[in-house]
Amino acid sequence: MAESAPSSKRWLPLEANPDVMNQFLWGLGLPPLEAECNDVYGLDEELLEMVPKPVLAVLFLYPITSESEQERLQQNSTEQGPCDGVYFMRQTVGNACGTIGLLHAIGNITSDVKLVMARYIINILVFVFPVEDSFLDKFYRSTASMDPMERALYLEKDREMEVAHSVAVAAGETEASDNVNDHFICFSCVKGRLYELDGRKTAPVSHGPSSRTTLLQDAAKVIKGMIAKNPNSMNFNVIAISKKVGTEA
Image 1 (spheres, helix red, strand yellow):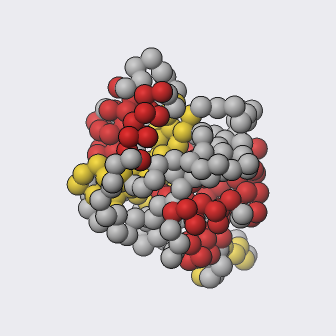
Image 2: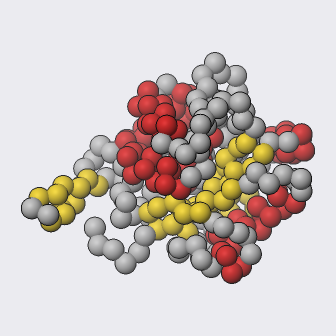
């Protein structure tokens, strides 16, 4: 999980574990009744159908190789088209790609989920009242007008996020080490196009037309292509963030 720009700050990597990611996001202000992370057990159509719908974003963990680095450098040297409306940030903190992937995911679906809810339990009944200062709500409002590098530097200095990330790392099932060579990216559908959001790249990468109903399948096609370039590796993981439906806040 290398850095996109020099920085002395390094975090321990976030585990590719939906339970850990759910607790992380819920603790930052995404209500449990709004959305949750789920494992994607395979990229064949029948396995994709098992993923709770609708899917709002897809996270992909893959190994960094010399081939993937060459492709990244080539994409960074190629001028990208306009990406109006895409929330994107660079990565300057080592091993922060899991958190940045989640920030990319939620940052591009803020119109689909509420980030300003708090729960209060009184006499066994659950009441939900809006609040205006959840961490994620403040983070996105504070960085809305920033460019991708300004957002990266904002995150680098954000002590509250660093602590939350550390707590999530500690909740993982495996012992964390900063000597890793895997990387998280996010796939989101924005304004009818599928975007690959990778903080180690200079801009979002468009993968063509998509929709909220085909996001998972469209991302799976791109992911299959990336896996095919690393036939000798088994270190891949796909996690979907799905909207929870059929519940009342």
